[in-house]
Each structure stands twice: as structure tokens, then as C-alpha cells.
Image 1 (cartoon, rainbow, N blue to C red):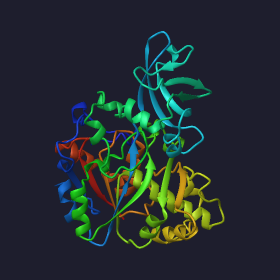
Image 2: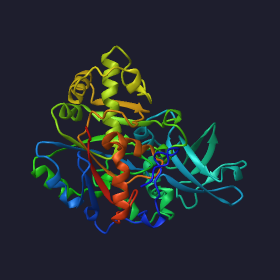
Image 3: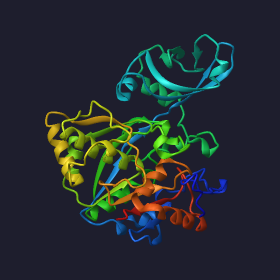
Image 4: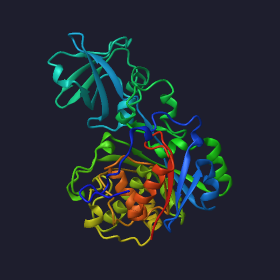
Length: 389
């Protein structure tokens, strides 16, 4: 794969290599295993129990994708599509359980054609209306039903635009992981889509401890790199780590993380601990984009940082924080020995995470995947990347 120095994270991705539909079975995907030496082995997701060490850990992101696409109608009769991003000024869990009204940040397709007046949602059954409120949208309805129930019934799964199709009934299942629990994402943590309860049971039977984090995936995950890495404005995403998860992480020496979202959560938690331990602010302050340049790594081991965080939430259920962390080439990954992830879009910040794990050899690995017929992006195949030292 030839490298363009002006676009170091670009590679040619033919349209026919983008998976528009998932495999028939979740565990039916192929798996490209990249060893720490750079050697490549062609495997299948079903081979995972033989590839992960016993007594290690496998950490997943248990966020749940919202039915965040909603069709509304203007007073003049024209249709507009709404993409809900996150509630304004309150946690997503609270907003989804709230009655009328709620206010959300959102994107409005064709917003210039919406001159005035409230929007209505046809056949909502609850008189759902939408009004502008500053730079957000105010949703009002009758009957007192929780907003989350209304979204589940009226909204659609927000498939990524590169699939070039509308979501159908099957996507409500296949664009969610089997362990999805906490709603709040507008995109799936796609590496986890390959895992099944049966496969996870086999991993546990082999001695692998499975744990959970939560990072609610925002629309910023699709924002491409547009220039120098230092000039990229990294989006923020909300993370949650339970006290029990922190305690478990403090005892695991060999960790495999499922998805870049899980890795970003754990790396952010490490730097949060470093800043907090050094006398800086705790979870109330977001983890900044370049915190790894501004804060000293006061914990030698990742697990020590997790143990310290567990001590800090002695009287709490866990920690919750926003992260803007940007993992770039040269960044030292501290949390994971392995990353299970899908094949990512050219010029994506997620490729920066991949290079931080395996170095510039990701380009030859991706070239191998293209030559070998692997399927790319959200519904595509996966790769298991061992951290390069």
C-alpha cells in the first residue's frame, strides 16, 4: 500500500469492500491476527478462545445504540430527518427516563428549509412535536411515556452513511452487541458485534475474565482527519467505569480490549488517575485531548492506576467523566496487550489508535486484508492486534 505523506492515514478502499450487511452469524466473520512481531495469520472469530491467554481479561463496551434517527414533518408538509446526538445539560440515562419535555442536541437534515413553526412526528400516537430551542431541539408529547420508549418505537437505528441504505428491522438486532445495556450511542462499538454469548462462555471456560466499560459513541467518531494531527479537534465522549470494573482491572496483567472505544475509555481512565493523583482535578473535569503531553505518568503500571481509582470511589458506584483524549502515533498504550477491532475508514482517528498499537506496519496489514478479501468497516471482518513493543 503506497503511502501519501500528505495523508498518512489514507488508503484506497474500493466501494465493494465495504460491508453493507453483516455475516449470517455474528461469529462468522474472518479475523486477521497481527502478532507483535508483525507476522499475520488468517483466522476466524471462532478461533478467539485459542488466541487469548488463560487468566487474562477481555473488556467490552456495553453501550447501547439509540434509535436516534427520527422522521419529522414541517408545518408545510415537507419531511425532515433528525439525528439525535445527546441531551443538553443532563445525562442520557436521565433524559431517556424523563417525561415531556426533553431538550437534545441534534442534527437536522435540510434544516435550511425549516423556516418556522414546530415539527410534528407523523403517527406518533402521543402528539410528539419538535421545536427549536437555542441550538438544540425541544421534544414535547402527551401521556407521560419515557422519552426512551418513544424513541425505541418511532426512531430508527442510525446506520453509518457509508452503508448507503436505510436501516431495516434486522439492524435493530445486528447493529447492537449482545451485551448492550446502557443506551446512549449513535454508533455501535462495532468490534463487539462479532461476539456471542456462546463464544464468551467458551472464553470464560478457558479462564478469560470478561469485564465491561461504557463509552457512549458520538457522531464525532465519523469525523475524518483534515490536516495535521495536532490541528485536529477531537470530539468528546462520555465514559463510565464501575467500582467493580476498576477493582477487577487492578488484578489483570494481560488485557485484551474489544474496540477502540474500550481502549479509549481505559487509556483515558489511566490519565485521569495520573492527573488526580498529582493534585489535579478528578472526574468532574474532562480528560483533555493532549493530557498525555501535559501530565506525568505517575503510575508505572496501568493496573496500579485502576486500583487507585477504585480507592477514590469507596463510597461511590464508580466514576463518570468526559474524554477528549486523542491517541496518536508514538503514544504508549498502557492498558491493553491486544486490541480486537474492525477495519476502519481511511483518514480516521481510529487508524491513529491502530498505529499506536502496532506501529506503521498497519499499512502492510491492511494491504494484506484488501488482497485477501476481508470485508471492511462496521459490518465487516475483524482484526486482533497484538501491541508492538
